Image 1: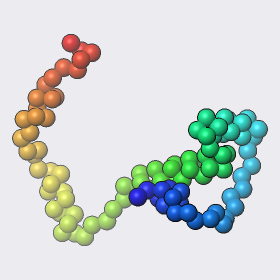
Image 2: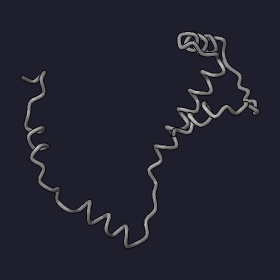
Image 3: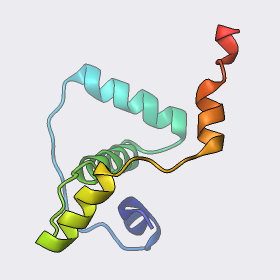
Length: 99
């Protein structure tokens, strides 16, 4: 389950205020998009912000390994790729727009 799904579907009441100041043009743009999706401004802003926040958090590619696991990981990266006939055929095939 995505983080935003938990907050959207849990039936929890909203108990925290988030206040921001915006330009009239920004508010109007948000309102136009929210209306197009049949959402309130608050729902649209909250869902969009949470989706973007998830993306930022998921883009963090930092992970830690102990020395032995890191050695094995490096060995896998350094090893030549295994033979893959389907991939070789795919890479040899011209794209439809190149034919």
